[in-house]
Length: 392
Ligand code: ATP
Ligand code: MG
Image (cartoon, rainbow, N blue to C red; front, side, top):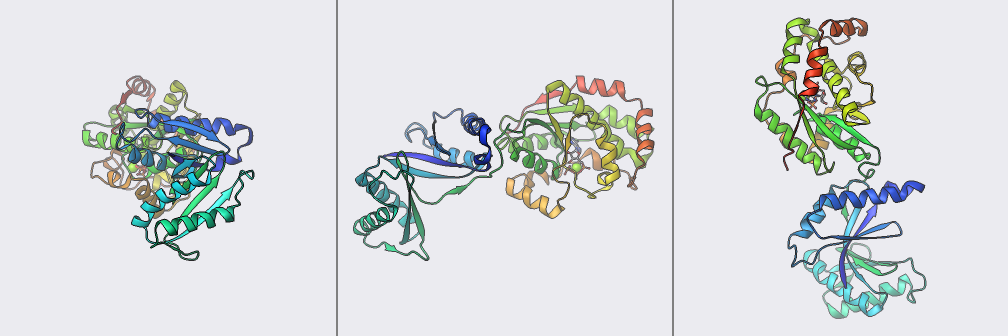
């Protein structure tokens, strides 16, 4: 009798010829996240099976595996299951072992659901339910069948082997990481950009992040906060790296030379120009920001048109149609909110004008940006960009 995790794919079951590639990506993502554990995989008809290491070799492996699967895109759920040969005595043994635990944790009323994909197995689904129901009640007389309001449901699936399991845990769905290419997330210490990164990673975008740092106006703690956020994101976007761009000189030159009302937009244009250069240097397919339509002056249609004109690669703003309350809810769900609200200053708020331009005229803004003559400073900032460790 084996103990294993039965993993259910999500949308990738629709993907025809790419299916194998998608399945490999899911497996490789899990393998990379758990690279220190001796786990094994097997694939079978739209399912992935993960074999954990023996519990004496890795006593806390179950927790690690379950938390990893709950953060893995491309799968919708998983169940810790018994796997036995197609033999009714063995199935009964697994059912008793599972029921013993469920009875203690959930209650006494139960129901069995059986599915038989392998029709050569001599017992019908209905027979399997009856045989197992009788066996469980004779082994544990306090158990009661309750088809309408059971405390727990036992699932039995007859495939190449027979799988017996209780409840399934949820995984986030989406597409396997990397199936949609690689992107670069502009990650500030705020609430929005980590959520934007999560949403794009969920649609299969493997991702690194870039932070524009403005010391001494923004502190080391502000940078550490971004490292923490990058760490949380990397539990979904496996392998996420963090770039830090030294941005003080550019910020000060803009503050000095530009009209105060236009500074935020010009700073955004400089950030996107640099991010676009990094995308070419490191072969990212796109950029991602946490902007949402109308949230602030730099996020009106006209402002987004202007700032967006500074990228050659596609720029995605996955929060564009979301309300702040919805974004905050997602930030809670993915575990970034508490870190995002830590009280460290953000260069954008520090230098924000009191009356920013709301509907910029794009040609005028483009010439203001050009007249700043930032080319040398931008090239220098790109050259001095460094990689920072991701807190984890
Ligand atoms: P966030 O909550 O992500 O900070 P926000 O609503 O506060 O977003 P802004 O501060 O105007 O909006 O920033 C808009 C977007 O620009 C951010 O979502 C982020 O993608 C990017 N951005 C802003 N500041 C930085 C920074 N210092 N480093 C990296 N990206 C930044
Ligand atoms: Mg911000």
